[in-house]
Amino acid sequence: MNKESKIYIAGHRGMVGSAVWRALEANGYSNLIGRTSKELDLKNQKDVFDFLKEEKPEAIIDAAARVGGILANNDFPYQFLMENMQIQNNLIDSSLKLGIEKFIFLGSSCIYPKLAPQPLKEEYLLTDSLEPTNEWYAIAKITGVKACQAIRKQFNKDYVSLMPTNLYGYFDNFDLKTSHVLPAMIRKFHEAKLNNNSDVILWGSGTPMREFLFVDDMAEAVVYALENNLPEYLYNVGSGKDITIKELAETIQKVTGHKGNIVWDSDKPDGTPRKLMDVSKMKNIGWSYSTELHEGIVKTYDWFLNNIDSIKQVKM
Image 1 (cartoon, helix red, strand yellow):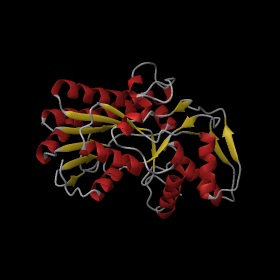
Image 2: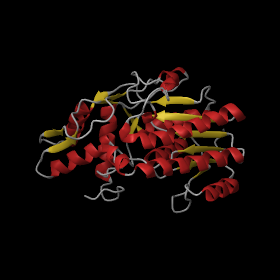
Image 3: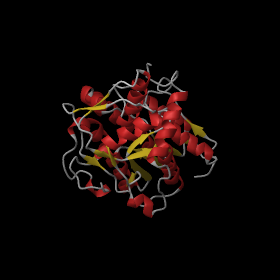
Image 4: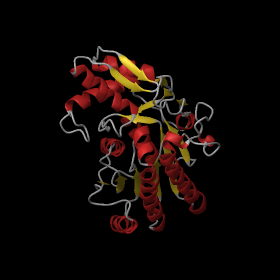
C-alpha cells in the first residue's frame, strides 16, 4: 500500500469511518473514496458490485453497519441481523470476485460469548452462547469474521477482522433511543445540568464492567492493519483496561459539571457482566492505544458542546 493507493472506506460518514478517513489523510493518503447511503445502498448487491467494479479500489475498509445499544437491538432484532449481513456480505463477496487483495472488516467485542473468561481472547469466539440483548448484531458480525477467515484460508488474500471494544468520540451518536452507554450518559448529564442539576436516571445496577477506546485510537489501528500484513485473521482492539458503569457515570458527571444525584433503575437490564478485551496480539505485533479514558471523555464532551446544533439525531 502506498500513499496514492485508492482506498474505499464504507461508512465514511459514521463515527469510525470518519475517524479512519482523518487518520489516513493525516498519514498522507490522498486517494480516499466514500459514498453516502443515498449515493450507494450497501444493502443492494448489484449496486455494490457495480460500484467496486468501476472504482477498482486497492483496499476496502468496512466501517459500515447498523449499530445501537441494548434498546435498539431489543426493538429491531431483524434489522440488526439482516441489514448488517447484507452490508458486509455484499462488500466481502464483491471484493473477492473483483480480485481486491486487501479488506479490513470491523466488528465488535459482542461477538464473544456472554460468560467467556476475562479478558476476552480471540480464540473464545463461538465457544458458548451470546449475550441475548445484542445477539442479532453479534451473529451478523460473526458471519463477517468467518467470511473473511474463509477467504483468507481458501484464496490466500489479506482479509483481516479487527474487533474493537466499546468506541466513543467525535461524531458519536447521542440519540437516547439508539446510542451506546457513554454518549448517552454525556447527553443525560449535560441536559440534567441545564435542568437545574436534576437527577440522572441510569439503567441497571452500575456494577457491570466495560472497556472503552477513543475512536481516533481505533482509526490508528486500522491504519496499522492497512500498512502491514497481519499474520492472523482476527485481532482485538482496545485499551486492555475496564471500569464499572458506576465509575464511568461518576467520571462523566464530573467532566460535564453536573451537581445532581445519580439514580440507578435496577429494573432495567445490565447486559453482559464484564467485557474486557485481551489486546496482547495487537500489542505483540506493534500497536497499542494512546488516549486515556478521562482525556477522551473531555475531548468528546468538548466536541458535543461545539456541535450541538448539528449533531446527528440530537434534539436538544
